Length: 211
Ligand code: 5GP
Image (cartoon, protein in one colour):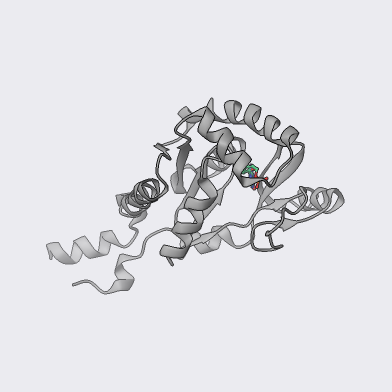
């Protein structure tokens, strides 16, 4: 058996996107609870905090001036306007941590996905979660009761636009049942970790096997 340190692998950037209400936040929370090799990349946003949200946990909540300053300082991997507010992925310590085998989960939209993919194709895994139907999506948004009717309407409109980008993802999972969807997303994560190019420790390991 090889020493563990021979089997080092690169971390991956695991992106989960979906229209809001398709269950992505639940799925990402479940994965983070079940798997201690992956951490959430906490985004920065200018949108107001919702009830139950915590600064530094769900997002870093900043005002427009602070967001501008972060752009100026080149602090973002990517950022994009969504629903009239801005959202961005802070660089933080992601790049170095990937080298050490740390995986990161990104709950970002298609625009952010495109930007991350352009910067770092090799490390990015793109997963898109679809709702089982448009009616069900609306029902879930209404049940959440965190947003006004107007906001829900604009989210539904935006959902259709978001869904149109489904073909820019590596995997597409329909969230009919949250437990089944969770299992599927975990299987994707686990298979992606075993990709040959991520297993940077394989060369010495195989050399030893063949000696
Ligand atoms: P919400 O306001 O419901 O938390 O998120 C709205 C949308 O913004 C979601 O589709 C979410 O994936 C996206 N989003 C959250 N953080 C980021 C980010 O850092 N970058 C980008 N591009 N989109 C983000």
